[in-house]
Length: 109
Image (cartoon, rainbow, N blue to C red; front, side):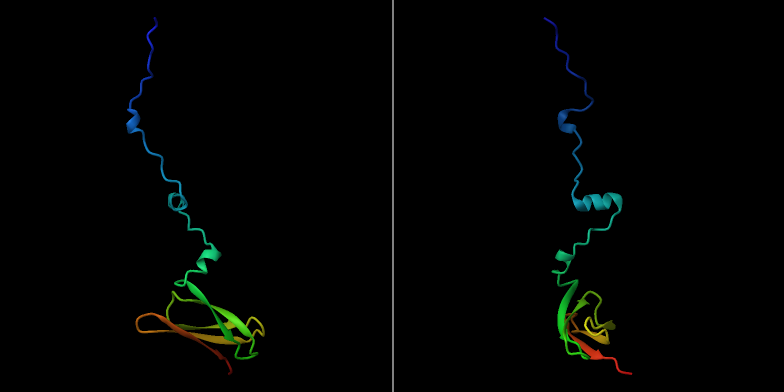
């Protein structure tokens, strides 16, 4: 009878290294990548932004204004999507940082 030889290993089977996690955040961190932006899920996150329906102060047409709620109270100018006139939007927040509303006005010199 020929003796059976077992292969030599420097480690026991229980000491085998575990496989690294290969989920999306781990891959992003490994290669220094930015997270993937998914507009479908990001639009549903109320902390990032919100669509607010207004009427254009020039043409009166209903339009949606997408506001960024992460930047706090501020004013900015955006053209109407229908008539292209400039509209000044002012975001209002409470003293505790809660969004209170949006005021949209004409810019008449």
